[in-house]
Length: 316
Length: 215
Image (cartoon, rainbow over all chains, first blue to last red; front, side, top):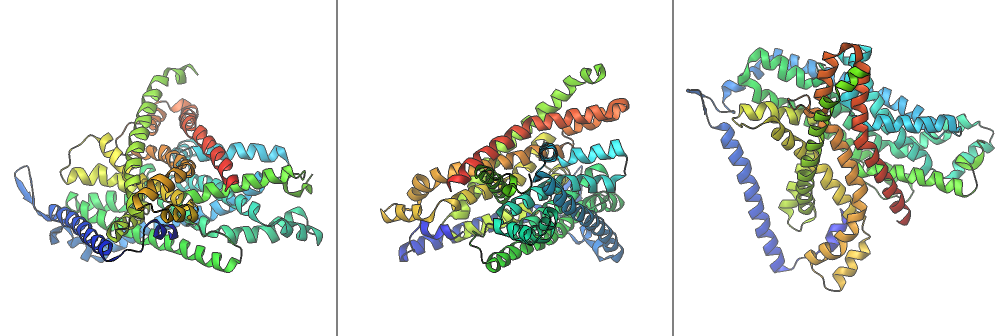
């Protein structure tokens, strides 16, 4: 973001004029496109000899005056948030467990965990949902929740492992030297710091989790999309499909954008308060997780090279 | 076992469609994402704003909803196209902001002194970007781009819920038809997905590890 300004000169009068003209031209082009799509949608359409009203015609939107419709939409929103909330709690707990197992000093625990994580990460969440639905016959809600817990648990586990690896070694040494056990040091000293450091990336992952609850549509869970489009859509008929879709989209955007902004705000706050020099990477960026993981692996390897076992050799 | 073996041709047909979805949407998303990334760093404010809004909206819409739009709403609006084409559109739209962000993070990762040096020897915007910044940004963007394609591989499964008979839809159908071997069928599908995602992930992690050290 800061790198862009150096790419070109501070514009002089001519460049400013050119830039302004280009800006206006592209703005007009973009607005023109939007207006064109809008007009296309608003135009009445012929279908099999009958003329149907355009998409913005009041007859396509009048159901939203009925409070019962909103109650029904609210049920869908609650169903989505419910699945997301339960899955988020589960995923964080599972993430903590996975990160402990993955960085365990016992090879018999560490290596199978690494394989398991690789397996869970490589599979589509949708296939996991189908698996749970068909094999465990749990019902749609738990199929959605358990699949999301497993999938996001692995990712949060990796994020936390990266957070643990990024901590200064002195933290753990100090904890051990005041007589804490391995596990106490992990839970009381290292985890709280790693968690705080990685919170923005975790929140970004939770946005992904929330978006993925929409896969419940395919396995038959009545979340927002299925509730609005299938249930309300078939009740009120095809005429309202477009308006119901627009409302669904807006609901999702409001929820997700709020959460994304929250993640960025957290990232700015932790970066300025942490006191450690760290580039404030965008937590929403897909590269953030990858880089954190690579740093964790590298820290493990560096520790091994110093002749200290996994994490200082105290665990041997 | 024999029963599962006899289903293999059907599996491979589904796998072929998954690969087709992956390759076509991957290439299209790469093109669209590059355009968005170029807009994002361009000197024209309107293009920058448009790219930023596109990224925010596309990234915060669930893929299921995008597919719903292409599979149900577009046909209702009068667009007549085969479902696989609509699936390409949905996957391309959904993947493009992630590609753009991966490219942008690579560009931002190039030390600022490089651009400053290029500027100070008199290169313009186009020259600085194409001759100095992009060649260095390129290798840093490869691991995140591979990750984007891994996510795309997994996302193709959503197309299975919207009338495209790829690996997920095939699996669901086969599991319904062969109630006695549900678990082997699901595991076969998992293995077929892992065949794509695990090697890609391995390559991405190796490259990232090598380059993170140099930084």
